[in-house]
Picture 1 (spheres, rainbow, N blue to C red):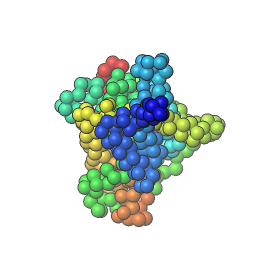
Picture 2: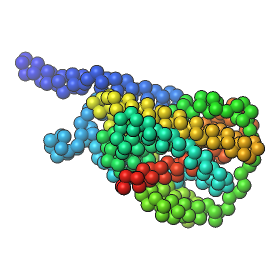
Picture 3: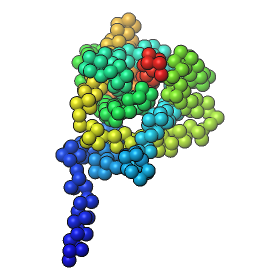
Length: 382
């Protein structure tokens, strides 16, 4: 009888129920809320489902992301090895390869002024950098946090790793991906507050046709120009442009299909679950995390506002030919931000089709965020 009782007692003590803290239970609740947003509300499920599930796993079984040194047996947890690929910048770069293979750069080529809208939206990054220093972060940590303003999860992870801020990588990545997923909630109030009904209803002229030669030359020229000026951007900009060259060249269809489908989804699983697994209660529930989340939101709002305000300026300069709403797509969340521009514009005029116009600033924002990361690395001599 005592053997049975001892066995049952040992089994009970091995369960998670007796080993979890209140913080773990809180994070489990947050994970379930993210799963609800992803599954029931449809908020970017490809991002939120793996992130939320990684969050769930690590707060039930913390050793799933433990390093070999922490486990004592020389074998790390499953998600530790996934996370190493984040730290080594492998997964962020592969994400850019997939994004490039999936994205049509034609709207940006057809309307080069989109580069300016994408650049304006990066204001949120540099504004957040100064604010982060004011709030007590050191210069490298401030730079790593501020890149959240570009709403670009892979670049946030990439820069945090390059600047040696792996301790902040979890909160930074979760904040960046969460704001990417919540673009349809965060952006519309800012866009509507800064524009008039008349501006939101502006119908833009159709974009000019872009030749195949232009589409082939664009990724090559951008790679040469950007990487010559900021060589440290090569892993991100280079992979983005390589993926797009796969798409536009027409001679490597198998590579384009692999990069934009199977590989992309595999990388999203690995990156999403490993990012979610960095949110253990011990690592996540602290004042630094709260500051990062707040700064990320401020940066994202500032970036959206700057894009819209620059759009208003271009609207005046072009005598009403540019709808300011497309400026909000200058953040790097592709293609979510462009879809939001379309949605808000369609609320004023259901016949207005802004999606392709917004894709120009949206693609420019991806490049702009990578360039902003390169500027920070250049400043710190990385």
